[in-house]
Length: 146
Image (cartoon, rainbow, N blue to C red):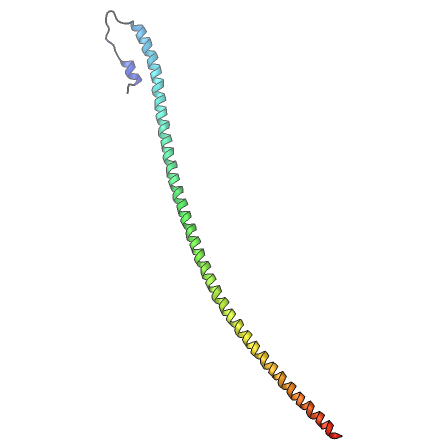
C-alpha cells in the first residue's frame, strides 16, 4: 500500500514542455494531506475492527460458557426431578405397605372385638337363662307355699 511519505518523496523527471513544478508540488501537497488523513483513518478503523473482533470473541466465549452453564443447570434439574420422583415412589410404596399393615391390624382388631361381642352376648344370654330359671324356680316355690 502506498504511504503518504512515498508520495512526498516521489521525484519526477523534469522535461522541457512538462507541467508547472509549483502546481504539481501544490497538488501533491494536497494529495499528501488527504492521503495522510485517509491513511490515519484507515489505521484507526483497523484498530477499532481489531478491538471489536476481540470483543465479539469474548462474547462468543461468554455465550459458550453460558450455554454450558444452562446445559449443566438443565441436567442438574433433571437429576433432581428424577431423584425426587424416585424418592416419591419410595415414600408411596412405603406408605402403601404401612397402610396395608395398619389395615390388617384394624381388621384383626375388628375381628377380635366382634368375637368379644359375640362372647358377651352369649354370656348375657346365659345369664338371662339362669336368671329366668332362678325366677321360675322362685315362682314355683311361691306356688308350693300355699
